[in-house]
Length: 293
Image 1: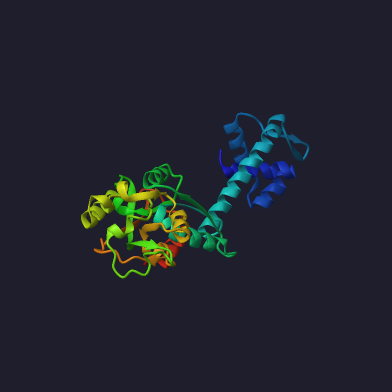
Image 2: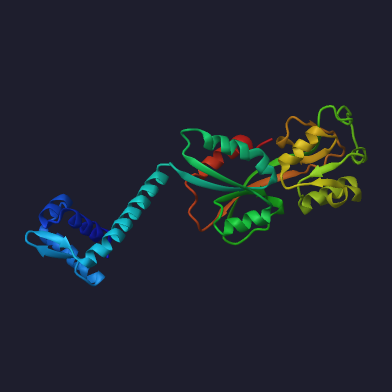
């Protein structure tokens, strides 16, 4: 059974005439007859009775008519969806973002999708690396942007390094530490320190630079996966935020010495054996525009 045979069946059911259906389908009558006989053989019953010059549906044919119409309709809609996707319309882009990329990319991505001529529906998931990678492997996401140094590579995933961004201790303007020209880590300790969950490489760098008291498990009082929430807290209190500098350009960077040289190394992860989402270039454009110091 083929869609072509079903289309022939529907045409003949509508016209009741082999002659008119053959003309409409640009077929010879014998070719149309062969198609209908082949479909009847596949389905196991006669679809039409000859009544004078008309061909009328049998009881079996009437039983199958609505199903045949639905199958052909669904096939047409599927083909239309494919055409629209190839043309860049009505695409869906499901993106997973770690804390840093989430703070920098979420709003620009949604603003781009909100443009009338964009034609892309954006779905964004914010979470930690482990949950994002699991969602990607289960094909619930098309791509994820995460911190690469805390990511253990998985078979079947394509990893594309993007950019390394500088980290810093940040505070609000007017903070008691904001006008100091030189600070040591001990100057930060009277104030709440906030950060997203930090990878082991960051913890090692902090301990190497400032001693055991700088380990995140010791010094971080406020921890949250959503960097934007921590930025808001730093704006409204004396909290000191440890984050990528570009995520909060309105905050003051504290001159803590020595500088650890830390930061984040972001990457784009997709499934290696899966065709990339048609709207993925949109994500790449937004990354190029907004994921930098």
